[in-house]
Structure formats: structure tokens, C-alpha cells
Image (cartoon, rainbow, N blue to C red; front, top):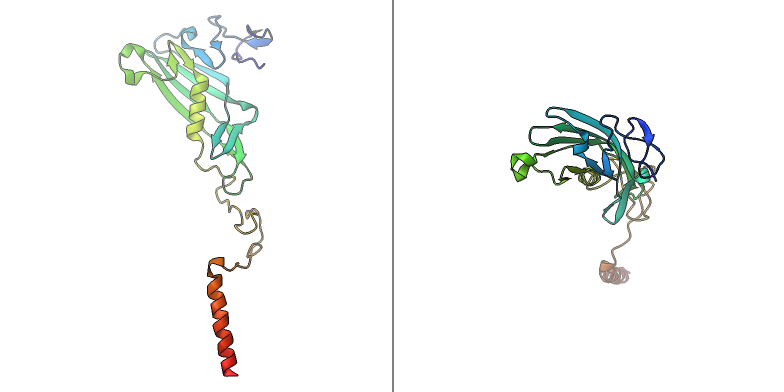
Amino acid sequence: SRCRYPRMSRRSCPPCGRPSYSHPIPRKVIFVEAGIVDLGHLALSHGQARRLDLDVDLRPIALGGQTYATEGGLARARLDVSRTSTGHALRLRLTPELSGPCVRCLEDARLPLEIDVREVDQPSAGDEELRSPYVDEGKLDLERWANDAVVLALPAQPLCRTDCAGLCPVCGEALNDAEPGAHDHPAEPDPRWAKLRELQKGVVGKEHRWME
């Protein structure tokens, strides 16, 4: 399995034994498990900050009966951690690209997202509004935070392009690259007016015989 330890110094990954990376100073592993960052192991003093570039797992998103996901299920994320007098200030940035069907033409749509979100966790402030739902006992659930941010950033109607013309309502083919007039199908008569058309034909036929 892929090692999730930050690339800072050449050491072996404790879980898998493969060549990986751990934090050089202090020499403590930042992750306590996949997707979890132990903020205490960063050993930051008040006013100090640390930037980490990490891979996070992104789960497929189900929307309108369709699925949208990143290639390989991973995305590169940048986490900024700042130590405050009462806790931590957190900033998460990532630019994943999801793919899935366009809601208009059903062709493959590639959806690049730019995500920049922030959280504060100030347990010493004594105010619940200053607590982050992603931090529990000093451990940041980075994977859950990233997945929630991607869900909120995904467009409500994913499109292959902003001017997608959709599908032809008659033949069902995509209209994006169609020639002008290629889908000008003759309109089919409305079956609900069939009886009226029969009556009209009968009236016209009687008038024609009368004129003769």
C-alpha cells in the first residue's frame, strides 16, 4: 500500500517497512494513522507555523445517480498549521480533478476544483463556536475535512463544458458537435389530436363532394 508519511527525510515507513519519510525535527511521526494528523507532534510554540504537503484519499461522490471521482482516488493537499495562544488555526488547499458524466449530454466531464478552506480549533478559549468538528483531542481528521470540502465544491450540475447543448430530444444524439440543421427532425403529430384530425378530414371530404 502507498505510504502516507510526508517527504521530509529518508527513513523507513513504520507500518509497511518500505522507504518513506518522517519528520526530521523532532523525530516523531506526524501521522498516527491514515488520514489523521497529530497536531501535538508538530511541537509548535505560540506563533509558530508548519506547512505540510500530503496525499489524501478522496472517496467517490454520488450525485443524481452518477459517480464522480479522482483518478486513483488520491489528491495532493497542502496543510498549514499555525499555533495560537489557545489552540490551532488550520488552512487546507487542494486542486483535485474529478471526472464523471455530464448531466446534459452524458459525455465524460472533467471537473477541476480549487479548494481553499480554513478551520480554527481553540479548546482553551472555552467557546464551542471556536472548536473544529475535524479536531478531536489534538488530532486532525484531514481525510474527512478534505472529502467534505470536495463535496461542497462540486457543482450542482457537472457539465463537460459551460455551453453544453445536451441531447437531441428526438434521436438522443449529442448536439455539441452537430452541424447546423442536422437535428431539424420533422415534428410528429400529437396523438392526442388524432380524433380531431379525423373529423377535419371527414368535413373536408363532404365539402369537396358537395362542390362537385
